[in-house]
Length: 205
Image 1: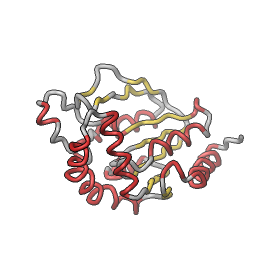
Image 2 (image 1 turned 180 degrees about the horizontal axis):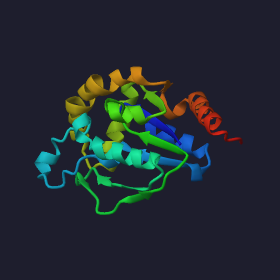
Image 3 (image 1 turned 30 degrees about the vertical axis):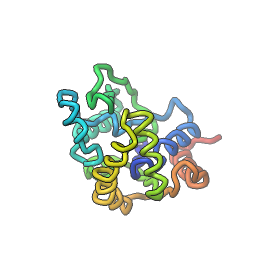
């Protein structure tokens, strides 16, 4: 089993990189585990309290469960991955059944802030994108997918996203084995990454 961590700032294009890597590999051999599924359950909070949640701080993630699930997959045991809603800030009643695979991709902005998780990763990738590009994507996502208005999205970025990126996410870039600039637009970088995976697993086109 080959476990890959793909991190980077919010809006950096990690999801696009993951999708392209998955498309380049045999689907039956790859599993994707999203950090976002492991946000702590805050469905009991009031709407006002929910708006104050700092999703960009490591304490917002139940890393103990994420690490436990990665260990289970590594032991060739299936897991029930949680689901999470940004609108309700609560975990869903349903889970996603994930069987072990030859390639496990763990994706999320904060995954390199957890030393125990980093020890389980065979390869660490950081998607590095300029702040101007990231903020545009963040605002578009907040408005279209997370139910935030434009003003709230901008305030949220200034209050939480920017300072947390500088404090927790940017410093983890030094832990990366591979850095991919400009996210999903860097086709050569993605090709190098997928070639490395194929070589490790003896996958031939």
